[in-house]
Image 1 (cartoon, rainbow, N blue to C red):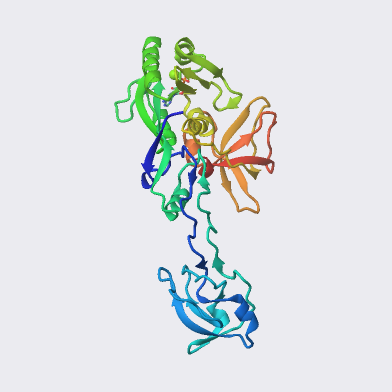
Image 2 (cartoon, protein in one colour):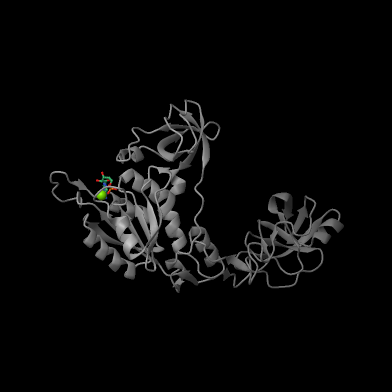
Length: 385
Ligand code: AMP
Ligand code: MG
């Protein structure tokens, strides 16, 4: 886990809280009116018949009523204004009739009506949130409302990314025979970059053992995590796993997952190592399902389980029992009858299958072919991204 640092709250969006944050004040800090109306003693409203009270002043937001309120009297009050001590209810102006400085109360009144008690949102010295919370807009709003200006967060995790492959060139270059443009590093940039991560792009590594070894050994010293794509399968040019085995530890290799089988996980010194498969679709799926949650944990956060929803399959899916599979799907229909169809050819080189999709369709490992109308589970992208 990286060390912690103290940041001004407005620079802490997307960062992970390192120590419990407590409220320095109660919120609201005073008893506040929830409505526009009249503040009174509920006992007066019950006792006087007809229920007519004298209006002796007003309390509006930012301008509390300063004086004492005599018996059988009330004040005009507005939303967010302080309710004076001794008064215990606010009656909506719609439920009152005003004539000069006298108001007639047209409803039964209970103590506490339309008053937000002190600490209704949070009490002084009680927790706002604990370590592991990612600061988003809601946390930001709560910190500001409590007057908190600084927060202790984990230092950004330093994460290095590499692509591997002799066939890869950077987009923009002139493409030669047998070459392809590097897609994966750009996908990793988009998917792994976050305010909690200092993502450093270390470029493309050739399929040469010595080059891979020296690059990974150097990266292991400088980064909290090293993420590579490609070179972790069983081909003659796949050296990444062998290098990690030699200079670090491979703790896991190959998952019962399609796409994404040849994934390696391990350590390089103090850094965690993630060797993602090279096929771009495999890279994208394993990044969404595994690399992002792993890095969220590395940053001190708590990964959410992906939102999984039921849907009715439109069309067929061929699947042999064996591996858990994720296909790219398009989810339509409302909450009443969500329908999902597979988007195009699902080959693991086809990045295009992602572009028209809005979810992954999860096919459990023991499933046989699925026919039109089957119940399936989908993971919407907008909850994964
Ligand atoms: P590998 O796992 O290295 O054998 O790669 C599997 C397949 O993915 C091969 O067809 C590679 O050319 C392709 N590939 C690997 N890395 C990338 C990348 N960064 N961008 C696009 N395609 C890639
Ligand atoms: Mg390769």
